[in-house]
Amino acid sequence: MEFGISDELLGTFAPILVYWLYSGIYILLGSFENYRLHSKKEEEDKNLVSKGTVIKGVLLQQTVQAIVAILLFTVTGNDSEAAMAQQLSLLTLLRQFVVAMLVLDTWQYFMHRYMHHNKFLYRHIHSQHHRLVVPYAFGALYNHPLEGLLLDTIGGALSFLLSGMSPRTSIFFFSFATIKTVDDHCGLWLPGNLFHLFFRNNSAYHDIHHQLYGTKYNFSQPFFVMWDRILGTYMPYSLEKRAGGGLEARPTKDCKDD
Image (cartoon, rainbow, N blue to C red):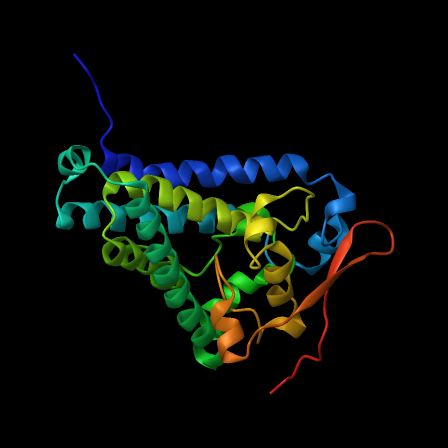
């Protein structure tokens, strides 16, 4: 008797497993002081929430994420067999990935920016994520549950539906998006990181946003920086050596408070 795991089940739980595995790698690399964007002391002193609370918050969001994914796959129907029968070309898969990336980026940019500009939403919802002034890998999905639902879960559902990808393709796309999100929050600038080669949106770019002077800039996530550039919220930065070791991302233009 064979026991197979459906594409829908893998599409639901693979990104969650990938999240903790990839975060675990960065936990092991966290002792590389020369590549940290903030010292361990800054991480301990500046962050306003304990790691235990962060873990509980992430697990809650992933639970909601899994429930929505199961409902979405159920509503859209089980098309695993159809996907297996259909010979998708590499070009088609690439198109689906690009469309999904653009949809996710667009949704998250405007929702993310609105949560910063609406004082009520920022104070009661989005500020929870910014309790991590110094981001670290497994805190990438530490959000208020409502924000997790609106930004990540609904944004992911839209990218799945509008790109036309199958549950099998979604396994790879959402695992990739998860790795990218964790990488952006890892707090490290490691040499040879391929994400830094292919994406301008990276750990230093997002670190600027997490600092008090940068909360009105660099809203784009997780892939491209196009909306920041188009709408004037792009904050360029330079990487400089920090006294005592490590690196620091510093804005290269004045940050406006208005």
